[in-house]
Every structure is written in C-alpha cells, then in structure tokens.
Amino acid sequence: MSNPAVHRCIVFLLLWMTIPEVTARVLPNIVILYADDMGVRDVSYGDPNAKIQTPNIDRLAKGGMTFTDGHSSSGICTPSRFALLTGQHHWRRFHGIVGAFGQSVFEPGDFTIARMLKRHGYKTGCFGKWHLGWNWNAIRKQNLSKKEMLQAASYDWTQPFRGGPLDQGFDRYFGDGTINFPPYCWIDNDRFQTIPTKQVIKSQPLAGGGSFRPGPMAENWNPYDILPTVTSKAVEWIDEHKSDSPLFTYLAFNSPHYPIVPNKEFHGKSEAGYYGDFVVETDTMVGKVLDALEDKGLTENTIVIFTADNGAENLAFDRLEKFNHWSSGKYRGVKRDLFEGGHRVPFIIRWPSKIKAGSRSDEVVNQVDFAATFARIIGYKLKAEEAIDSYNLLPVIQGESFKSPLRVATVQNTNKGEYALRQGDWVLINTASGAARKEPVAYLQHFGLPSYRKDNPGLLYNLRNDPGQRKNRYSEEPERVASMRELLYRYISGERCAPLRAQ
Image (cartoon, rainbow, N blue to C red; front, side, top):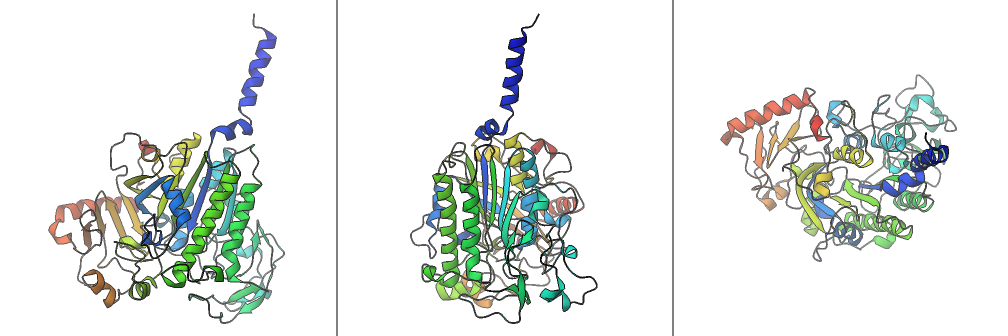
C-alpha cells in the first residue's frame, strides 16, 4: 500500500516544477532588436575603416553568431514585420505596406510568436514601430471623405485603440505606430497617451531628409524623441522584469528610416552624413538594451537578435557618390529591390549559453525562421498550418551536424507577381530587372553593372561566384531555370516552404 505522505510530496514536487519561477530558469529570455531600412554594410563588424562605426552591434556579433546570408521576407517594411511575427511569408496574403489609417493585416486567430510565447509563460512586450495596421473603425466617425479621414476631429482619441500589438499576443506596447505616418503621437498599450490635435500640412526640414505625411499630430510632437524614448521604455520593461517568468521583448526602431533625425549629440559621429549618424545613434540604443540585460543579470540566458526589415533606402545612391559608402556592401540593390541589397540584411544572434562567441554562418536564413526556432526551444510542436515557411535554426546556431543547405529554397518578394527564388548558391528572378526603380547610371558604372534590358525573360545568378549580380546566366542554364521556376510556382500556389519534418 502506498505511503500517503510520500504521495503528497510527489504531487507537491510536480506542482512546484510547473510554476513559472522554475520555468524561467530553463527557458531563455528573447530580445529582438529590429532596425528599419539598414543595409548589411551599415554595420562595422569591427572594421576600423568602416565609414559607420557600430561598437555595440559589433559587441553583439563578437559574443554570438553573425549570418552572412540573412534575409528579410520583403524589400519593404510591413511585409517583413508580418513574416517575422508569423513565420509565414507575407506574399501568401499581401505585398504592400499598410498606409496611413490602414487596417490590420492580421486575421482572427493568426499564429504569432508573441502569442505562442505568451501561452508558454512569457511576458511579452512590443516597443516602437508597429506598422501592421489597427482597428480604425472603432474610433473614427463613419462615412468620412478621404480628406476628413486625415482630420483629428474625425476620431475619438479617448477610446481604446485595438487591432494592434495587444491583440497579437503582446502584454505591453509603447510606441508611435509608424514614424512618418499619422497620427503623430504616443500610444501606450491600447490608449493614446498624447492626443493629436493639430494638422501636419508640410513638415519642417529635418537633419537628414525625409518628410511626414499629412494628418493629425499631437502638440509638441518631436520626431527626434522617438528613438531614445522607445528605447528607454524597452529598458524600463527589462529593468522591471521579475524572475517569475521568461521575457520576450520586440524593440522595433524607427531608424535609420526616413525621416533621418539623429539627435545633435550624434551629428558628425560617422563618415556617411546624417544617415550614418542615425545608424550610430541606433547602435547606441542597442548598447543601452545590452547594458540593461547585463545590469539585470540576464545576459547569459537571453537570446538577443539584431536584424533589419529590409535594405537601405534609395538615398544610398547619393551616399555612394558623396561619401563612398555603399550600404549594401558587395551586393546589388536597395530597399524595394529583388536584388540582394533589397532584402539581405544584418543578421546576428547571441545566446551565450548556447552559441559560440564570434562564430559565423554562411547558411541562408530568413526572419520567418524565428518562429520554428523559438517553438523548438520552448518545446512547442507547431501545428501543420502554423509558421509554414519557418525552419528551425537550432542545428545551425548550436553547431550541430546537419545537411547543408538547411533550407530547400526561399522566396523573396516586394511587388505582386515579382519574385526571387533562392536555392543554394543560385537565385532566379522572374522579371526583367531585380530593381524596383531605374538604377542611376553613376551607380551602374561604379560597380560595372549592366544596365536594364526590358527584353530579359528573367534573371539567374550564381551568388557564390557573382554576389554583385553582374552576369545573368538565364540563357545558359535552361534546365536550372525550368526547375527553379517550377518550384517557385509551387510555393506561390500554396505549398509550404518548410517541410513538416523541418519543424
């Protein structure tokens, strides 16, 4: 006959082992630091000759793994943010950005990494740029004209503001929505902390260019406050963290996106103009977060990811001429492009207890992969319909043996109907050009690039031998083109990019 006292002890022990305090000792904290419009060469990676010095991002790389072939899902921001949070490519649902006063891109019940982590005991916080839409219908008057939709009086700013981060699995949100889209104000959780009462007709000149779209703005709104403020709120979130649960922090910087607004203390801190100075300020904010983790004693068991939503904006062409700094490094293209510079971005993961410091990987990885990776870490088995394009990166980051390449292929997209399929060293582009806009002649000459030919049936490059995408191999490799086209159209017709076995 069993001993009742022993039985009670066993039951108590099992219950004790399931409380959040014990879980927190095992599950790592997760921090994603997401830059906005930053090219792969805008990070110095310890190069003393780099025009832009980023010692804090370099510090992150020195302590973790740098991915040389890391990508966002799109060459523009809303799609990449959606893909990062859901583990599925944006092009399965939409292609463009959410405009001013745009509705949420999410559907009821969508899987997000925040919702998954929250259900597994994480405290989840989002700070900074959202740009994935909100439920505007709940706070605005009905039957408004397009002009009236831009007027502050057309909205009840005292009402809860739903459809944002709190409805996608986050416990906490503080940010400005989107830096250059109205309304220009602070949003705290699902409430407006500052009320937009005036109109932006024409924005004032800014340090490094850019402008604000017309719409409601709060009194004393200052774009220079955004970057330091959202960072300070994220740091507060970390400082206030209790050890009874693991922490997930998603800090989406507004920088170095337009408008380029580095604060005065950073002017002249780079050799790449105000843009470079804005990157330096961003790097300083990264340092504040890393310091907060260290001060809190969380560094060892915290995964920190630094990456960006897409490549640098097209003023990169001007920086090349004026400062001899090319944000995309050895790659062709900028934001919006299917060329590599549009979506190949800085990509660093640090996890001191699991990742070898100063390591590097040449594996092709994508931000959609965070979902499957986090799921494996917390022991969650993804359902067949969840994170369908996401690969588990643990074998890569932990140095385990695996068959390379990890992924079968990946698809990049910015505009509807225009895609790039990456498979191994090869990339197929199904359009006449990988550039979204006409490339400047001076830029083409600088890198010895061929000019656009509208009669191209498509483009094919071997990135190992030709990272600058100079030589189109499309006509030389008809069998490869046919095979890659067939796979591309299977994917865009609905086939998942990540096999179920990869979960």
